Image (spheres, rainbow, N blue to C red):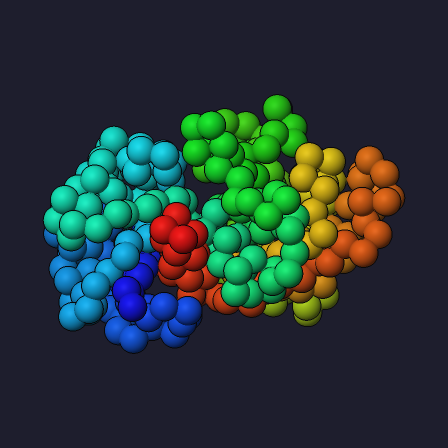
Length: 310
Ligand SMILES: [Zn+2]
């Protein structure tokens, strides 16, 4: 009866948990601040894993981490959240330390895998998961397989080009869907409109983020409503593209921005219907919210380790 250890590495926290076979409730769990911008992240990660290590045998460790990374070699290529990890061989370093196989993939792929195995996507064979928060991340299950790709860099759905002349994305390129519909992109649009002289109740707000804009929109503010309409419009174009490539039976939305509900999803669905290549893609297509919340990365890492050692 061997256990599986799962790890979720975030910008603010590292979480490590151990699971008995067939269970998705951890028998031990450790949450520690990652202090990701400060040196020594690897040491803090190792100690978090040690603190949950069971007395019985462990079959594997699974890890969800921000990318870009190479899941085939287990290398973190460069993650803006953790500056000291440049081409860092994470899985081989941990494997030498703990003497078990270690598997790694990016946090959005892992959240998609978790929603498929344990959450809103159970029973589906073709699934597109999209998380909309400070960035936009994606995970794809295609015909019952996690899509990783040749370089392990498939399913980067947030960096699909919508307009090559569009705003600058978090990655530095222009016009990716993340540059239109992420939380900071929605806030940037509002700030630009205010700077251009547009009237809005948001003018008196000291800090304008997606949460404040959603509140203003619900109170009827025209600029705030327009900001979500714009984000939803572009999101509909992006998803029309995803449908043409992956033809999923379910679309799952996670992340803080997707919590705003109709403000975003009404214009999104209108745009999707307008832009989709053929209406048959929409027949019986389920559009729903993620079910696993903050645990999605951890549970995806668990699913990955079990899948690889099955
Ligand atoms: Zn980008």
